[in-house]
Length: 175
Picture 1 (cartoon, rainbow, N blue to C red):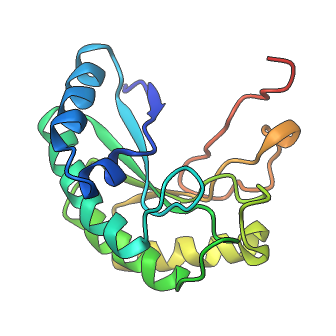
Picture 2: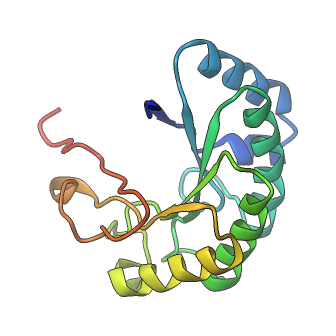
């Protein structure tokens, strides 16, 4: 039995890309000594920080190495802020799958809150995400893949089920 104690650490790949590996190492040391088992990392972003997909993939590999050294799993989030940045989703997810093939402690969440206003129209479609999941599974057979969690009052909906596991955010309305 293994307990999932996840923590969103969205900026770890960005921090690596900005030369802040020492900060990432301190954070991962803290996580490993405080019962965290999974860190969730964005591989692209526009809103919180500017991380192009190519930089995110390169930096994510270093995050995976550092996390693995501390016996932590890493959940790489493939798609975020897709309404604000145009890029090839299929290529990005394929490359993440190839990266995860080298790290047994790597998981992939196809999209962060697919129905969030910052996501492109196609990312909101569960069938589109299932197609991307199948592409990841083709290049990385053993990698576990989640479609993503809903957003806002629909956090616990079943719209994005069908992956190897289901990412659920508890309803955050009202605190």
